[in-house]
Amino acid sequence: KTIPSKNHSSHVKYWWDNFLTIAKSDSIKCHNAWVEAGRPKQGELFIAKNKAHKLYKTAIYNTRENSKKIITDKLQSHLLKANNKNF
Image (cartoon, rainbow, N blue to C red; front, side, top):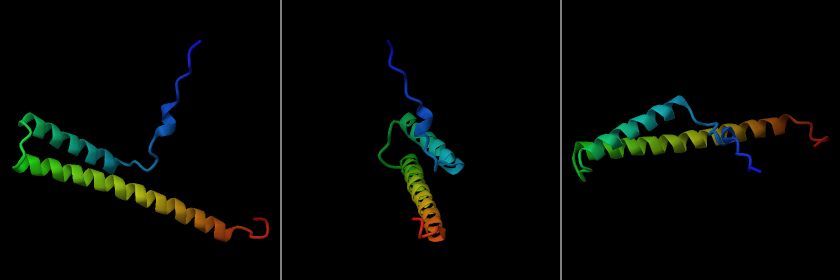
């Protein structure tokens, strides 16, 4: 017998959008350029890599938090509109 594999589509980040995809690819490009240059500890490539990484991580945080807020607001709205006697 074999163990059935999990469906990885359930692990999709529902809050992921095109901006995050672009920010991720930019961060990877800056990182690769930094590695190819010998991983300098200062200079333009170092600054660009850190800036792209920070932008990417900040975008992930903001997008995830905005998604949580939207879901919370929708839930609160539905609960306020619900019939309290049946609840």
